[in-house]
Image (cartoon, rainbow, N blue to C red; front, top):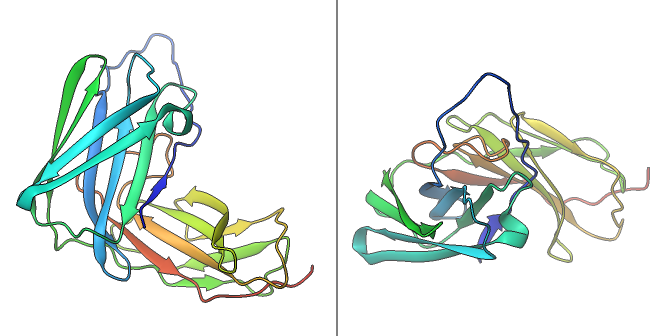
Length: 224
């Protein structure tokens, strides 16, 4: 099953008297996803001047690797006009070599090459749940992961298969509050470590992009 994280809210800051060179219209990276096996993860940040309904990014790589990723404006575009998406999938596994991203943005084809070392992976976080999780609040913590820049943390309902809440942090713990959980359901917390700072809006793109997954044991909640 494919997974992806859509855009969050980006803040656009302006400082009088300062200027900076325009940022690339396409920033992209790909790398390993360490879960039950080793699959692939990707990170895309797009800065189109025009704002179409969708933009498709094509990826090619060693061994005939080919993939097309379509970002939708409704879910990937931030208020500042920057689009971004993080994705991960247990398959396919990657081979070492050069992967090339291409996208038609504002009438021009943008190309981004990325070197991948398929043996490079992030360790999986070990996730613990705080004492006495309740229908209103759940706290989770995890160990440091060498090479990780940030974490995507998701509270999931194992009974229904739904994601109840999620957040992106650089810390090693988080608390989900103001919840409305069911005492009859099973829950777990998933922590996705990422080699780039995906807690930033938009995420920072630098070098190979690796992810890994750690999951807590299933647990139930009690009334507060």
